[in-house]
Image: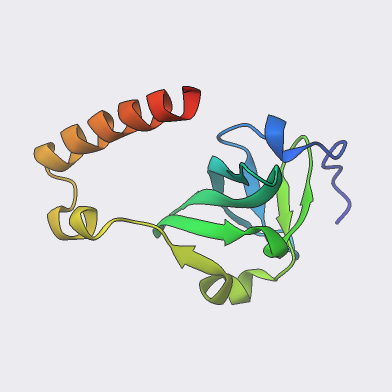
Length: 117
């Protein structure tokens, strides 16, 4: 790739909405949440918003975290094998109903409060 992805950064400062790209430069989605193994203080993976829904990208599959985007170790053709589905069963059943949207908003608020504790 000829594009500059910026300086390498820590997973601790990786921002929500940062693009996630495959090794061959195809955008797979954007960062929703970064996971850390709290006790060990190590990077555990990333939740990625994709057109197919929420997916989990495990830490060994991340080649580089930089200012402008996250790069994976695999090409775009292998994304289904490397991105694990993280969507809830309830969300798949209910789809995009009013009840589902309200439950999602309530859950996000609880998650943020839990993370800040």
